[in-house]
Figure 1 (cartoon, rainbow, N blue to C red):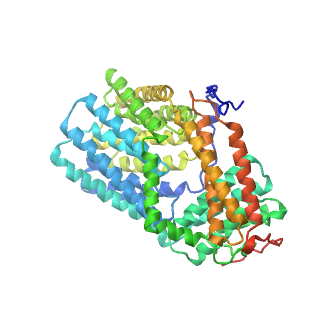
Figure 2 (cartoon, rainbow, N blue to C red):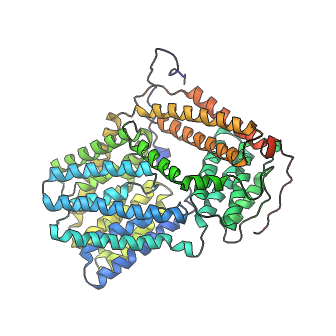
Length: 574
């Protein structure tokens, strides 16, 4: 594609991207941590479910489930960061539920309930994207709050129902943090193992795709270590491993002093396992105990660092945020889906609201993929529900067991592809209605099918009509940030008097800017109705940034001297 966006006086609009079919439904390898959210949500749900079963109040499951589902969040974060993140999720879930319950207690107008549900969905989408809480993102919040809007509610019941959510959420918080008792550095080890594996792929085949993947994995590993808390011997070894991974993708040639692919893969396997972390020798010219991460960690925890983090969050939420068009899409799509279903006489329009809310991804192409996945998964899921419904009605205990099984299955399957996970999510969501009393199976299935189709159509229609012209602006800002980061890395790398921590910080900043540049470019590439992307500038900026990373990796060490060649280090236990 010709780069026309940089020509003066021209604002060409690039052609529409294709909408894939087969690739959207193709299965991938499961996540290496799929079992963690799956087990966590089962444990966090089982205790409240069985407690309510014992006292004969299964009709309250919806309120405890709102808290239990918080156990799905934060599994990629180190435990020091996870504690605050999951606590924030619990409070956000309770606040969303409170708004929904108060609204439901004050009005029975379907039009008002749909409007509030759409507003909540848009706010939840923006906040989850801005805080980067990660999967499952805003969908769980929207599912809970939208369902609560259409549940009968009296004002005097609200405090008790919210207390149930907070209690179940507190237990989910304990479940999410419990693994820290047996493996304190587990998240850091997994993040570093991924970085080593990606670096090994890059060292074996240094193409643009593997190089970008390695940059993203190394950046994620550094961020995980920065957020992990005080240094420990294990974390020190992990820092040294990330430095080797960084050297391998930044300068994969023999002159770069990087470990070979086989060595990196062996380190990754040992790091991911339960044994001792490999203790590699120091990277060329870098002190054994300091890679600048301590200074950066201290800066992030200082008052000014915390203020800067808050300012960055406000910028992502501000008037110029690229998240604003996505929020408008969510609001418009959810409202349109809800009102269409209400006009057709569907008794539970919140299913259509949740379907529409679940579609919105980084761009239209990804939203199209999610629309296909959601529709296929829900249609197959209602068939599963029809088959399992007689079993769930054998006894209340059977109903609880069915819900727990599908909770586990959803998390086990969703990392293969979203549609496969939806096959399990759909019967679980339908079975939740059974806790309040039996419903005609035909009515439930018919409503869910209609809501799914209408929600997907309305949601994708809103995505195509609400343009996101700010995606190209995000690319321009990322290009500028990458240029500044590259200049800073070159300046500190060439300065003999620069402190080692300043060089490392500049190098990590450049890596982060390259990751953001690639994310911005990929997001904009899947958008419609915007000016042509500066693809040549993107490619040139990425190539220049990686050349700078390679050069600074080769000049590592006091005085900027080129380090001597490194012999392949042996793998040892810490």
